[in-house]
Structures are given as C-alpha cells and as structure tokens.
Length: 266
Image (tube, rainbow, N blue to C red; front, side):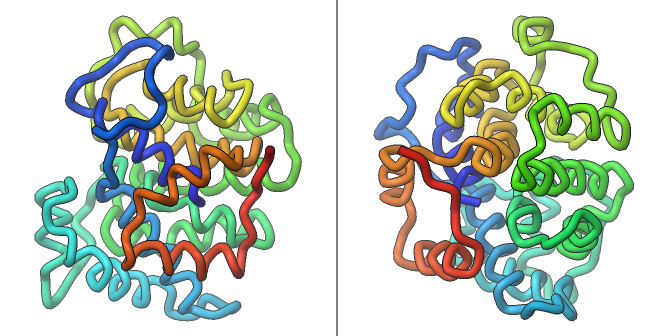
C-alpha cells in the first residue's frame, strides 16, 4: 500500500497549485505526508490488529484512526472528519468524499478473494463515509487493487470497473484542460482509475494522476495503490518515499508489509 502513500507525497505540493503536465520533479523538498497517508496507514494498522477473520474490523478501525490521526491535527483533514476524529462518540456522517477511496488500499492488498475485498472495504469505510457513493468509491478502488494483484490486465480491470462501478468514457487528454477541483468520490475515483488505465509504469501512473489537476494528492493516492499492485514500486522510488515517514508511521508500514509483502521492482 506504499503506492498510495507515494501518490499522496508526490501530489501534496500540487493540491493547491495544480500542474497540468507530466514533466515535474517527482520528489522535492516541498513534498510532505498528508492525511491521505496517515489514514491509509491507520486502516492498515486496523487490518493487522483485527486478525485473519477481521472480526470487529470497523470498530478497530475507528480506534486506529483516532489514535494514529490525532497526533497530526494539521495535516489536511476535512472539517467533518476532524470533528469525527476527536469525538468521544464517533458516528458515520453520510459522506461521499474521496477520503473513502484514498485510505482503502490496504483492503485490496489484504483480501484473499474478491468478495473479501468488498467486505473489508465496507467495514473500514462505513464508519464515516456511509453514503452509497462513498462506499462505491472505496469498493471500486479496493477491487481494482485486488484484480491487479490477481494478474488481470489493465483492459480487464477497466472492463470490470465499467460494468460494476463507473462508466469511464473519457481519456485524460479529454479532461486535462477543464477538470476542476472536486473532493467527491464520483468525481475523483473514475479520474484516478483512468490515470492507472493509461499508465505504462508505476511512476507514469502517478504523473498521469497529477497532470489532470484537481485534488492532486488524493487522486494520486488512489491511483498509486492500484499502480503498485499492478506494476510494483521501483526500489529507488520506494527508498525515497520511506524517508518521508516519521518514527510513528514507519513501524505501521513495516508491520503491514511483513504480513502482506509489497511488490518491488528494479
């Protein structure tokens, strides 16, 4: 799931300063970890804590998100989620924001079969984003990751997504000039998926995602998780990305990857 974190880090400096091209410096000293990475890691921690049967995963995820997220109050949380994170009685609030999809990648990597990817996705999503579009965006992302892990081609994954989730009938070139900032699942997850479908490599997928503008870090995080499952992460990119994680976050990734080994390429 490091791919989602990489997308977040690389996209962080472009969220409010969009760059609608692919010829940018991949990592720079202006990059940073946002709430996308922190919540992705919180979900991974919950998956590890829940055990192989994933009993009470939703309840465990609530606790993990609050415990891991609270030390980072200024990393970019939305207002409703920030209130939820500090609440003594956190409850779903009907969101269909793209936070549902950006944090779900761990479910796609942990799932042993397709229906389990869907179940895990729902468990970690419904605790906040219980709107049908929020659940749909998260599930589509987790399913795409699972299918990529199973060796499905990009065309096969796209066909499944178009049949069951979104009719993606555009190319990135079609939307690049006019795509606007949006934080809903229904207006970011299809775009993030298309960035993967058009990619030739992991890095190319991240560059695709950022090149359309909009909510760059979150779109690239969604794309990055899928691209990792399909292409794997080059060693040099992986090493650089790990340097952005602090002493709280690094051990979470290590525990998750020990249980669900990452795909690394030369």
